[in-house]
Image: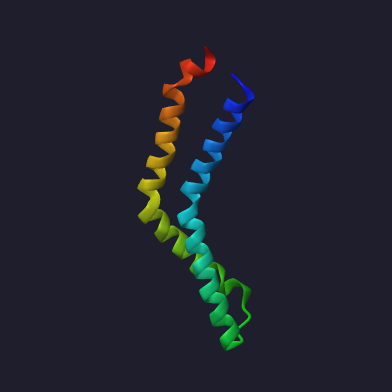
Length: 89
C-alpha cells in the first residue's frame, strides 16, 4: 500500500465521520444560538438554561437522523471490509 492510498482512506474515514456527525452538530449549534439570543434579549444569564434545550434537541435529532447515520457508517465499514483483500495483497 502506498502513502497516497493510506491518506485517501483516512480522508474517506474523516469525511464519513463528519458527514455522520453534521446533522447533530448543526442542530445543537442552531438551538444554542436561539437560546443565546433569548438569554441576551431577556438578560437571563443562567448557564444551565443552554444545556437542557440542546440535549433535548440532539436527542430528537438522533432519533430522526439515527437510521441515516447508522446506514452511512455501516456502508463505509462494509466497503472497507469488503475490499480488505485488495488492501493486504
